[in-house]
Length: 423
Image 1 (tube, rainbow, N blue to C red):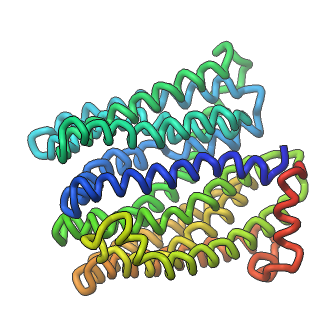
Image 2 (cartoon, rainbow, N blue to C red; image 1 turned 90 degrees about the vertical axis):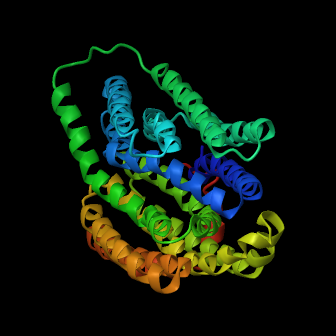
């Protein structure tokens, strides 16, 4: 299967994600209104925040080590799955210990932590195992079930936030259990040759390098929502969550490219990695700009059409966030190349610096400019992170600046020829 065909198969899951995310946001906005939408968004953010503390980069690390040491794949997969459930249920127990000082909805939502862990890490392991069809099926389940179950809960219980959270939880548990069964079905025995202890140490060591960046990246992506929730009314978080969900639809394409790019650049047999990263970067940048222009023109009427006039306050933050997500998406492509080369360490510096700037600017800008300030803080911090990663990538890869940013006449034809061309 060609490189772009693999990307297209992965992106097909993301297209379903986009559709289900849009439909779910419309449903939540129409039924719960801005304030209720804000409460629901905050509630399910908590388990994802804890997930980002616990995953320690094992998804990216798992792909790299499976590609480098395929003979150990069974033990790698089982060890990582075991970690997900031990770490996840430990976190659930801690959250239940906080039941007297935390919203009931948040405590219930925290039960999803081990299942979020095993899904988010497990889907990367499926990419490393070259199980794209299975990856697609699990992705579809993970995205569609919450929409289905929350829709049913609204039909039965009305605009009840607790029942919506409970429906979301059931959907996540089913998805996590499904990917666990399918991951374990790809493995055989547990006993493997000597030296495995050192291999597992390497997996966690590599993962920890990535984890610092991923945790900082989550802070970059979601600190604004927590700060909006703490400094303003919940309705403003409802408005802003719509801006974010629309803008982040653009990230699904570079995310699909990044997953396959990491798989290819991790493969010792592939030699034309520099060209592959360069043409992927140029074409994605072109598509990014085109889609952003379309959203600038159509954003306001689309918000009115799908979410109602109540959410018009979402439009201005959306416009500010569009260039921000472009920088984020391009950073992911370059970072996937670096991880494939076994050089993930730049994220240890780039993301924490960006996250610190993001948090500081959010506190200042939100007080001064409300949710528009949150979007502006994201734009500044994402741009700074992109510059740091770009500089490091150019140094490590010996690639040229022009190779990344100057679209060439035959780029689109060459890129789309990769549907059939194997890399």
